[in-house]
Length: 388
Ligand code: ATP
Ligand code: MG
Image 1 (cartoon, protein in one colour):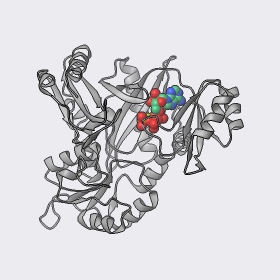
Image 2 (image 1 turned 180 degrees about the vertical axis):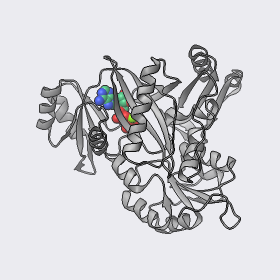
Image 3 (image 1 turned 135 degrees about the vertical axis):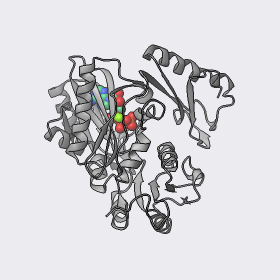
Image 4 (image 1 turned 120 degrees about the vertical axis):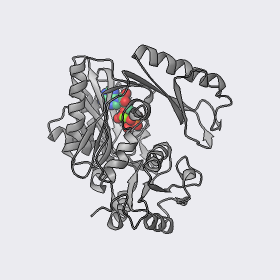
């Protein structure tokens, strides 16, 4: 039995968040707006989310004492990052309701298991295979063609676990590169998807199985990192609906509870292929704060608290989001935001990270408006006007 958020002995329920980064921060902001309380556990004090609450446990979840205090302070627990040791998550779930469920997180942690699960559920994926040795990789390339992608099965993010290989020599190099603490990482091969666009769809699903499917967006990656999101994706409406159907089918196939980001490829022949799923708020859904009736963060809170979901529909015809990636090492806030804020339709989000590093996600800008051309221009120009 999950406690009702609003009848916890007269006190609002406390949502515990494993992780204190920007996703946790925006989750917390939604939770606060709904009258809930928030506990945050993160390694290090004053994380973007940790600084919002006095229920901040800054020794991190690998510290048993901090973890017990965090559990005691929380009524329901969610996460902002799927790379948590599954044994720890399972131990937490013995004491408190955890959503997404540990079984879901475990499945998602391994990209091979993800692809096997969804392929078995009839969801289209690019051909893939486990790779145990460089010669396995060469055989994969001979069968499916070079270049193809070698991925670490676990702990990959922002493209860090991916290598595009052109030939046998690259295969050997990838096996040498993907070693952690002297131990070779588990690898898989994926046929190179010749995509014309990358698409993503957010799906919220609560414990009762009610779902909310967000619009299909285009994500634009630069050097494997999301740079911009356009909503709705500038593709045919039938393709957008197909992407929404695939994303919903993925979340239903695993009985996921919470909010999920489903990444897909639109290929040259108009096919949509599943790429990967994230069991948490996702960068491709940040625009929903300004552009949808109910944001991905609020629906995440509603889903894990087993409340009815809000409408994922857009309230405007178009929205663009641009990530503000660190350009240098130094302070986490820009030197000047004055010129940027003169773009009066642009919403600035700064995560409050203490330090910037090249490529680190420091914040984002969203513009909601009447056409993709208009919002994209305002988002790009306003991001340019920030002085770091
Ligand atoms: P992120 O954290 O950025 O979402 P990740 O590190 O978990 O990602 P993926 O999403 O698997 O890795 O891949 C990152 C990017 O690499 C994709 O967005 C896409 O641009 C490219 N990519 C991944 N798999 C393939 C593929 N099979 N064919 C072509 N490009 C691919
Ligand atoms: Mg990805």
